[in-house]
Image 1 (cartoon, rainbow, N blue to C red):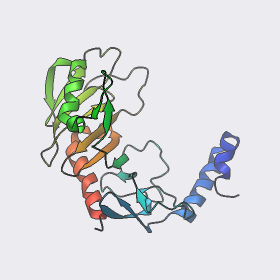
Image 2 (image 1 turned 180 degrees about the horizontal axis):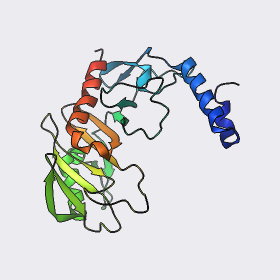
Image 3 (image 1 turned 135 degrees about the vertical axis):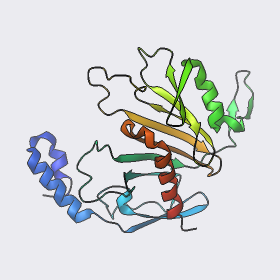
Image 4 (image 1 turned 135 degrees about the horizontal axis):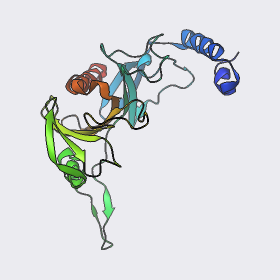
Length: 236
């Protein structure tokens, strides 16, 4: 059977047949070979297994990219292995959705019809948090060295916003699917997540990543591990 045929047939194949085919694909295509590319002013060399359990040599990374994503697995923050790919909802997995540079000097069209540069502080996490504050309850509490805010309309808008300072001192905030102590409704969401997205002035990069809310107490360790990998992979 050719690569991908089991997925094309979808539910027509018994689960054990699809699983066996997946094992064969991973065994054949799993790779830790270095993938080289440039993002902004840096060159990166990243083992292929941080992008997925299967590496297709006929679909190489572009020489220059605007951004990229990758995967890490707690507790050692390695990439994919020949085993950990099987559970799509593995709560050890950290999905770095996108790491990218941003274009700061962008013209905007204002309500009076004029065209002017957009404010340079529009990416600042403090500014963005200020825009968010109107949707949050005034009452807050501290947990895991962060300040936690529930939404005003939390009956219809579950979750919370967590705000504080990253290990490098920069202010940031992120959302979680559920507020601390907030129960699931009819089993939803099945895997509550922390959704983190911010611009780092010190890195001059924007990042989006997600991980299971089970590990929110380790937010500092997770954030540091992600950036440690990024620094480790920079060749120049």
